[in-house]
Length: 563
Image (tube, rainbow, N blue to C red; front, side, top):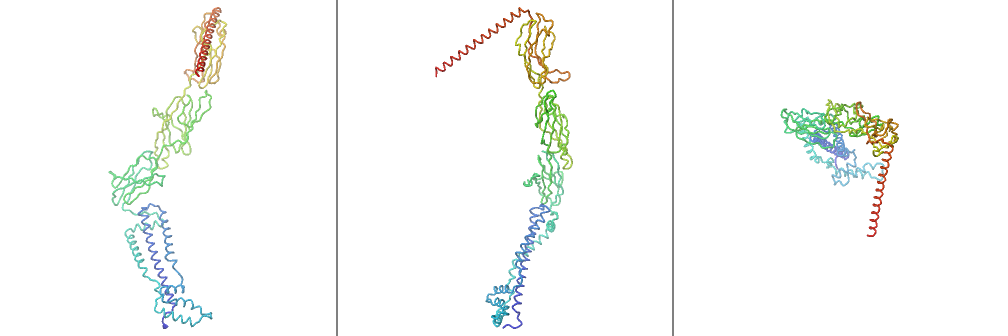
């Protein structure tokens, strides 16, 4: 039997439980330390080595949140969930698992020791005997050995290695580690570099199609080479294009690179050794482009036509038309010159309006055909700093001017010259037309080669075509009419074209016919001769028609026989 100095079972179980919890705390803290230092080193590798500190100020707090989440999970999985309150029975089970020779005496004693009170069927002697046996069996056992701190040896070695490595990193790159902690806290700090980029010189506003020179200066560790990385400004998904830079001959500690033919805004940054510059933007100023064009053709008043709106910059217009341009551009315009494409001289300047200075208007009179173009002075470069006033020449457009044609007139009847008596009334018929509208019509005649005498016939009142009918009683207009007089006559028409002062009006005269005034006997003889000639002509035409009909009939009979 153990003497009274031996510790009782309850104290030994409590010591075993305390040893378990110390083991859990020790293992959990070591693992947390390993994870903490590993995460810090991983953050440094990602943020400095891979991303070179260019991930932005929001990236550090994001890493911190991820780290806290990971450490929280490790703390729960490796420590918190293993911490347990003291339970005598559970501890007894853990002891017997470590010491199978107890043969469940410790568990049975723990279960029954509080059951004897108030239960008549439980023998106190039995409980006492079981206690004595349990005490005797466990007298030489150390319950604290249910946990083996030797299991932590490898973990301790790993932790010492991690701590040593972290200490070395912190000693060698102390500034970098401090910068990482600042960035994790959301401070916009930058990692130190072996080589410092001290400046980047470039032109931030350029004309469409031009080139730029980028010059970067450096200090500290001499670099072997340098690169410039470029991509389109508005395409963040595109990969950066790497271009080598060359050492500047006339500037020490600098590299330069020409970027040719810029057609859109450009983003770029420079890398020299382990240092990178900020990302810069080159603003490429394009020529203003016409989004909408409205050209109004206001025809001359005499044409009596409504104005016409078109949207084409190359068009045709009747002579004398007033042309008005209304242009809407995609960007601000400082000046617009209309250029004669033949000699390159400026014809006029447009008026600029609109809140964004992108509405332009001007007008010209279409008197002659012209090839014209636009010479733009952009007004948008001022939005990016200094106004550059870049000038752009546009493509060529044309105005084809359609001249007002002289009217046409045809004398249909009489169809030939002839004779007449003093009582003759001549039946005259004609037809006239014009491209825009007819005005007055006259009968123009001469007596024995005298000056023209005009007899008004009709006013077409702007009609584009019409017929002329007139029965001319020559005795009414020629008072001294007598045999032997020769009269030449024709039709003449005028259109509505307003002739300029000193200019020639648009007149057209038909073919002339001539009559000779003779005695009635001679006129009767001529008339009969003309009538006989016409009859002979009709007879010959009738005979030709009968001959042709007979030949057609014979051909048809031959075709029927052959079938």
